[in-house]
Length: 357
Image 1 (tube, rainbow, N blue to C red):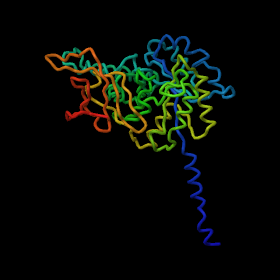
Image 2 (image 1 turned 135 degrees about the vertical axis):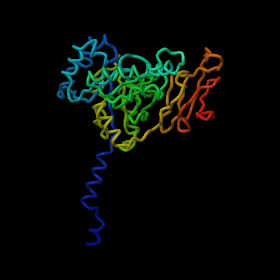
Image 3 (image 1 turned 60 degrees about the vertical axis):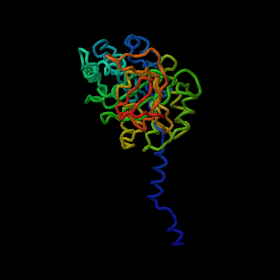
Image 4 (image 1 turned 90 degrees about the vertical axis):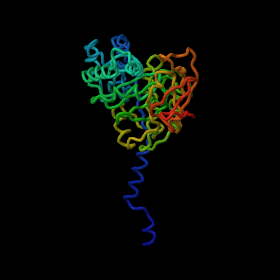
């Protein structure tokens, strides 16, 4: 009997096992798009399909789902009454985050290109824009910023995440329904930069832009280890094809399956950073390559191949761009710092070697 008792797991071991099982969850956060649109914020955004949805304030009606609402920080100056309405009517499940790309809808990487131009009259426009954005975000009590760019580079986000009151950035790609980075987790200036995993956009059942059923099916295939950055998915919600009720439906289906946790973006960021020890999935590339490339995506699924449409750069008295573009790839696990594009439109590493996939 004594030997049998020794072979039984202790109570503390049982508790650890149960706790471990409970912790095995995939963490999800939804972010509603198009809050950069000042006109929409003044009108339809406050309607019953979005921020004004009756179920948002009523768990009895199936609401009460954590969500992030993109909102233009310029609203502090342009539409202060609407901002006040949003803040006053936010619940514990709502958080406002700066819409793309901060103070206004722009590709911040283009500022870097201009700032790098020796002929530019304003070589500091990236910093100026970032500081203006940070000031407006402070007025709106926001700490997360959404960035959209055709080339997901360090330069596109660095000035913004360098601001003291910016905790993290959501980096959206213009193509692939905002989710061309396929959930990538990276750090710039020691701040989290995360890409959309897959977008709730239209009604496809697979790909980067899916309906509710496709979203749920995709998330079911992903890991549930809280120490693994791949166990976290930020979901952009396309406001023109899906509304708040669709977010509620997706959240309820995930909850019914078990093994999923839905968090507001700010809580999501805090959990991801603290639980993963700031592990990256793939580093963001830096360098002048971003001024020559658009329509970029990452391969995902544990690999770091960046694919873009790039314009060959011809060196001469002045840099001139050929009119044609070519497909270019670079495995960022091989090199990712100070990349550049050559005269045939291919990626090179800092040491001059080709960056291949």
